[in-house]
Length: 440
Image (cartoon, rainbow, N blue to C red):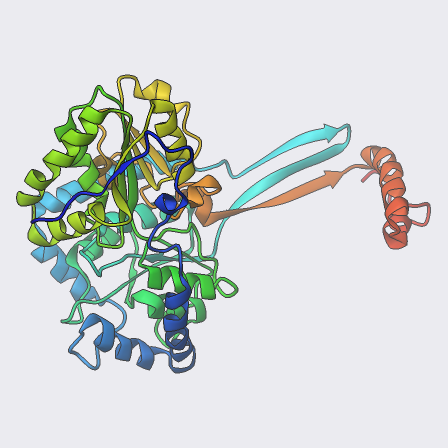
């Protein structure tokens, strides 16, 4: 492997070059055009379009593929799965469920804002949510865990999974095992833009859902964008990205290992080591090829493509303050802080999907088993968005009740507001024209 790791020296730079903050999904224009006919075909043709696209894009060789995973397929998945892997899936489910149960808001709350005036919120689950589980560059029962568990904890009445099928028309065994262990019974074989369209409009087999959650390729991101008027697209989660923020205290071999984690997801990922230490920067640069040689060839190729390309590599800054500034400007999906005092440095971070602290908390643990959700905002969306959570599967409705005692004072104030704003109907509704029952 003769590629050269991208090395960006910003020690003499006045400002952070804007192009360093870009991701592969920054320009969705070409993808939007490509997915438009796919979406329209699913809308008009339903299941027939899903089967046709499964053959065209997923290599499915079975023309009459069942779109919904059958009970037999679930049973086969359990028979095929290594019992130790099942145990690890159960371990992860336990941690993720525990975290999200603690995160769940109370059913309702109410306060007395004035004597005789009560107001509050009631939290209710969204009626139907689709969980998107990608398959193009691997199999991801971990994504099943991260998307389905908070939905189950929230109490979503209809929670479904959509995922691309394999060429034999089957769903990945790990996906089915995780779904069954969590309690999801509906798994549908439709990925990419066609899958998003299927749960947006519904087909003969796939139910229309109110919301879709989960990460995906730029094609999935583009489809969510085009269909946002039909289905809530959820947390903007595109191709994987990470920053490893390091000072001079870290072992370069360790930092190199962790820089590889998100970069191996695919050539459309983004991953940067950001440091003010020339020793760490050069050490990581030297260590990466050795790690790639010990990896699966496909994943090593993905990682090297990212770290030797325009969307990844090593950024060397003039001081640690500038490294933190770069990190906040980048707003990474995953941030790992490898410094002498990571807890103190956490307080300096404003923009990141998740923050993993210290030498024993690699992104790998966060992706699988710690408990917080690993479906995170990408493409700088962490500046305004949060990780996927129980809250994403619920909505709030406010409620209020005013007694006769509380009404009198509020009516007078309301009448003044309404009159000033020119709403005579509003004003009349709280005037002497209102017949009031006693004792209410």
